[in-house]
Length: 290
Ligand code: RIB
Ligand code: NA
Image (tube, rainbow, N blue to C red; front, side, top):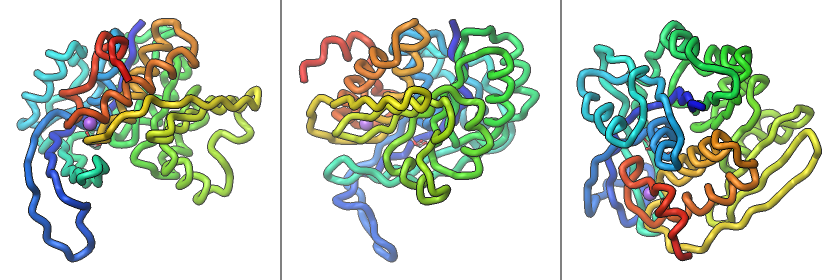
């Protein structure tokens, strides 16, 4: 089937810094890199590299042609990416010596996607297909509601976290994938764990400690460890994980099988500098010796 990913496309600017800058501090970076990124684009590339057919729904401006070309080169179907007249999104990513990051985003065209654009693409989708989305675009609610009514699998990755944005879409989701910071933000904002009282499956990623799967229907909780690696850049690891999960489910694998492969893909990703351009493919992940 096809994975439809409503997602952001950013130009990523990487600055290697000795530590993340504090308020009022001026800091010289020791290197600069530029590449394709955006949580959306990263997930599309990850799912494609995991072997899935992925159609990206998004938007770029006049400065974004190279990003669409690159997505295409990486095997993503780019026909549903609109070309608009405002600047494309970009991200300023500081990466410290331990591989931790702090990101500032300019959303640009990522927030200019129309319901009409989404509706047109999803009118070609079939039951059994997948919709996934993050929180760096607009249109998530319309997309989620439409996909649900079509009988598609709906995967919600609520990053960056925003309570109201998540509440608008949660009733349409089958699976939520978030990190422990986002899970805590949700608990703090609402007073309860995500998915409580629903049939949702929730995967909370725990960085080097792997992830936890909570099945709210059965109440079952499963923990998955991660291979131990020396991180150089954790940026994009969560996106790689989510893309691999979507691809695994699309291929008919169980959620547990999909998670087992996805934690390996994410572990490999943290050993690489960069985002979409360096996401490992299925062979890399299978061959990796941890
Ligand atoms: O998750 C990493 C991504 O967050 C980067 O590629 C950056 O563009 C931001 O969207
Ligand atoms: Na990385």
